[in-house]
Amino acid sequence: MDHVLGLKCVLCGAEYGVDEVLYVCPRHGDEGILDVVYDYPRLRPRLTRESLAADPTPSIWRYLPLLPVDPSTLDRLRDGRLPTHPLFRVGWTPLYRARNLERKLDLAALYVKDDGRNPSASFKDRASAVGILKALELGREVIAAASTGNAASSLATLSASVGIRNVIFVPAAAPQAKIAQLLIYGAQVLAVQGTYDQAFELCLVAAREFDWYSRNTAYNPYLSEGKKTAALEICEQLNWQAPDRIFVGVGDGCIIGGLWKGLRDLLALGLIDRMPKLMGVQAEGSQAMVKAWREGIPPEEMTPQPAETIADSIAAGLPRDRVKAMRAVQETGGAYIAVSDDEILTAMKELARGAGVFAEPAGSAPYAGLVKARQQGLIGDDERVVVIATGNGLKDVASAMKATDEPYHIPPEIEAVREWVRGAAESAA
Ligand SMILES: *Cc1c(COP(=O)(O)O)cnc(C)c1O
Ligand SMILES: [Zn+2]
Image (cartoon, rainbow, N blue to C red):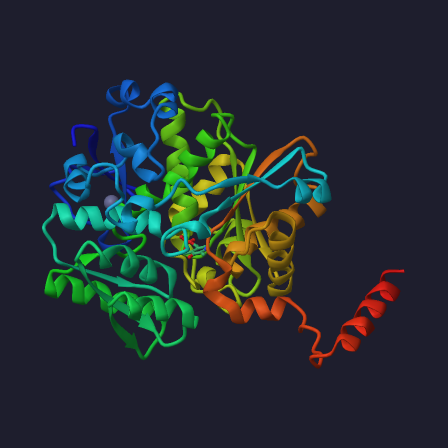
């Protein structure tokens, strides 16, 4: 890994060698999140627009030179060109030009990044994939994670075929599909009688005691490197013409922090020439970042806020990656926006019908945020905008049913269909 210079604390700026620390800055304990520092001059010739254009790899591994993993770890899992594990199909998700929605919002260009099409059906696979490779490098046989849903189901999906054991700490209530994924892939699930925060703390303590590798967000520095790959893909898919804005749902703030890191890497490598504005979207019932951003509260001084929303994947009272999440928006000139649960449900329908993308509530929130930002005049007519649909709608069918109407119930008779056709014609007239 001659391309990684070290790990840098986001609070104090102290730098460490990759062999010196495992997770966080020793001076700051669990809050001292580390950023991976690359040797950009060394990387420049290895990762060019031309080399990427010639690379058929349909996954995050096309950016291997810009990821903190040893290529030989990946090689050991390969079997020629065949994808031996779902791990090889993480990322390189479609970026759709959503012309219907673009017209509706009167925008120059609107793109939807469908990250529900990852192996476990959420964005979290990007981080889990890198976490699993690090565990293999370190020779660990067990990975532990605390999660409200997608992070855990992603870890379980991608670990299964690689033969790594998972111990998952979940709080009691998560959508059923996500729990089903954990169980079917054979993760060992500890349902903690307490909050997500308590489950998280317990997981950190247990992982230390039993020497399990920790796939905990805003703790393990390599996960954010996986998350940044969505930003790399968006820019490459747009032929290196960086968009004006990227909208994304924010819970713990790791995704938005990761996107920002990816964009900074691309700028440093000269692959893009300007920084898109990052737009963080939260639910009104869980808007810790929105509140702090509006009121100018520094992330270090934020206190726990209520976290009640239908968008379970972005419910977070005190976002763990708040330092990076705040900087990502401030330093790119973006904004934080809160949307109601009703607006999220409406967005879910509009994304499905207008772009053909069915996203879970947290994955629909960015579009709701875009609609609101457009109404408030925050976005110019000439802007090119990306929204990231971070999770598949089948993850949470109960919420989808709230967004829609009942079907029309009929007896098995043609007369009933005739009646319905007449009614439909009348209401259309
Ligand atoms: C985790 C998740 C998010 C939010 O990511 P954070 O890093 O917690 O801000 C958004 N959408 C989906 C579907 C997620 O699973
Ligand atoms: Zn520090």
